[in-house]
Length: 321
Image (tube, rainbow, N blue to C red):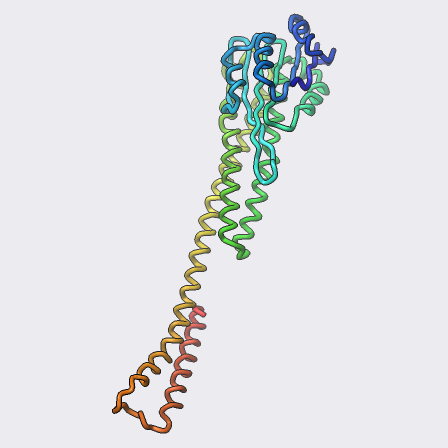
């Protein structure tokens, strides 16, 4: 489904292009056409391939979808795949945008994603002096928008991680903490899969041999690369924090179990003393010392209490109880 189709000349919008007018605008040499499509059907992709003269391998990737982020050059045209990551309740939904760029056209195919690029189009139209660079600048604007949308996702993950770290030392359920930490780790892996390959792709657009369509825009693509580098570093740091938090949580569980074991051992010792004394005097031998002594029972009972009080005091002093 075509969402938007606009023609530009000298950095300014000249027309909203209807579906059946795209071909005629593509034949012109004095303008560029930017077409945005959402969740295209296979037959629509085939029609776009014919109309824009797209490379069959790039179209094949778009047909299959679920591609790894990448950048390819096919002669004078470029093909870029990026992941669109959006919050979906407590999980992350991974969409995809495939961007075909030629001398006089930009075709963006957005799949499994709710958020559009209206803000990107508005930005480009507010900057006609940069839009004069042509399709390369539109490619930069789309990439910059997708990358900048990763920052709120990462900020939210880091906020969740800080909250769980506080809960670990607040004595909440260790199992719940570990489950939450593993959920965060999965989100970080999802974000890493979107950004790490893209960092390599953007590197081909600044410095060294740059595609002709991107000439003069090296500083802009370098800025995108810088943002991706910061995101990747933050992801790596957050993953290390998750690993450390899991280790700390498990260590606290071990310490808690050790404290329980010490308490049980202390109480067992308190019970063992009277049990031992009662066991000795319960053996019913005829010739036992003090067996018929009038003060035998009070003395045995007092000994039990005295020894237990002494043991309790020592255990408390040793912080076992």
